[in-house]
Image 1 (cartoon, rainbow, N blue to C red):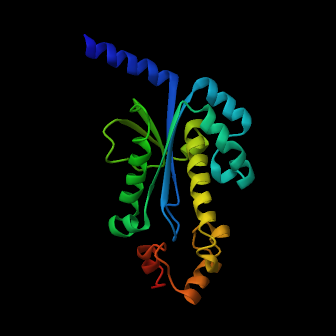
Image 2 (image 1 turned 90 degrees about the vertical axis):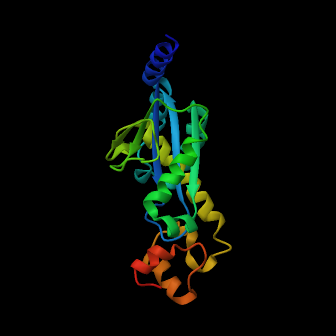
Image 3 (image 1 turned 45 degrees about the vertical axis):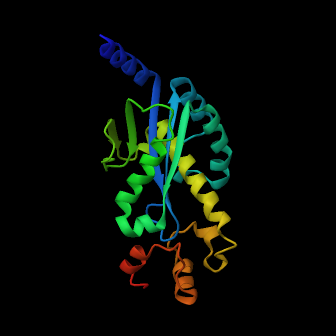
Length: 205
């Protein structure tokens, strides 16, 4: 009887809250991969849409920075996780991304009854209900919000690393393999925050 009540409560909560997850930095050649999960009520989804929350890739950096504190304020709960360059090189990018997602989920106060994940790949270590949505950051506000939280969090870290790694234009490229970044590696060599597994594929090391 108690189990049925708990299940009924979970189903009710699932209709009240939307829980979205996204990652950023998967294709970068420098720095960690970040993931974020955001829990939103129907009311706050509507408010955030009015503010202009959408897929982070379609927003300017200025707009993302404007929306970031509003998302954190209006979310019922959220979590941010990351996986290091060492983990990416050792485990591969998919497993490392999954690790960052699990770390974000562990920061939530309660386990979500259903998780909406951007993209086609299952979060294999997750034993709860999950739905994979291709281009989910353009379809679900909670995923859009998670994409903004992950992107701003990672970009802030990249910008803070600019002084230490000044020869690589990290402030501009955010760790992605732009022409200038790749030519800087040829000139200055690789750092311990460059993903060696990625650079090997590009024949840069």
